[in-house]
Length: 386
Image (cartoon, rainbow, N blue to C red; front, side, top):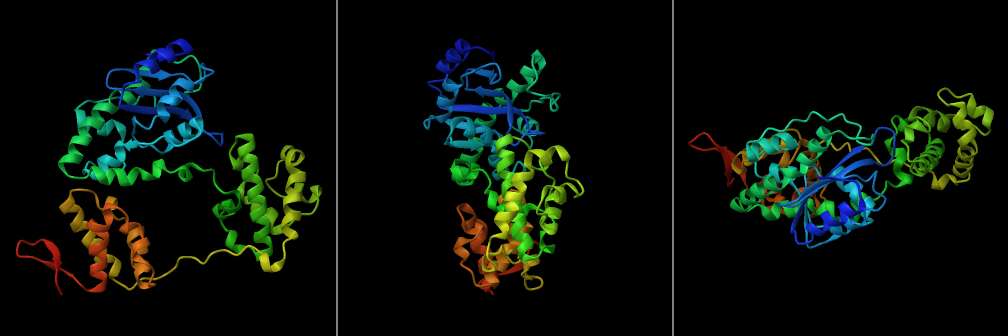
């Protein structure tokens, strides 16, 4: 069903009032805009499914109220970008959420599994991703495009049901609940702090403190302007040009216009604001200059990370999930560095939720020498008392 009128939307949402689970997906374009340009919102229950057209509909309130209903589980596959869109439309987070990609990783179907692969794995069906590069904001949409979009939720409910059965069988349902808490935290979807955006610019460590302070103010101005214009920040002023402005600290418009990569059209639009940001930075006292945090360059004891990586590999085979789901190399390095710097291990990511019991605590026991690794009589690597 393709919904393009208020009457259709009201009727469809009425049919979903008693549903306890809703499969949700979105189609969007985000090539030149700060925010996603949403082209379709697909929703399904076990009995009803439709693609809702947010471009042709002026009011999505009936649908948004359904999504905000905390009595309904909202099912997504790879939820991040869909939730960014829907949280912005709803003005709030929309728990409870279930992410089939996360659940698939925790039952051993593979990390970062695609939707087509999870449908084939769970249901034995092959779906074709023939409309991957569709411009979902162009109208009219073809019948094939609409069917393609609806398939993304049509099969999501049976995939969810299969995963739930598998999670219960493996006693890992609580694992998923812990992993998706991030999707239910409003802070996850907060706009980036403009005062921290300068940290994303390459080669900023080549700047002196005064110039770094200028860069911080310039990057903050650019980020706010990108939100205001709903465009990519680099389309206002490129990173390389912003870095050069901070290095040269121009004090007038002719000086800015002489910098390579600065477009004259943008000079007329933003020149005064750039000069204002520079002046604001120059007024900051030396004791308050921006200082970069130290690089996390802690060199861990040789061989320790390799030892833990070997254990993670063994543990992943026992749990039948990929090693990176338990702990990737970056997390292992962080864990060892945390330990060697005498930081609170309870605060580390690998001590959160289910990971504490299944990987964090055993790894800490290895580091403290309470246990070791050995090869048993069957040739398997296992933990042993020292």
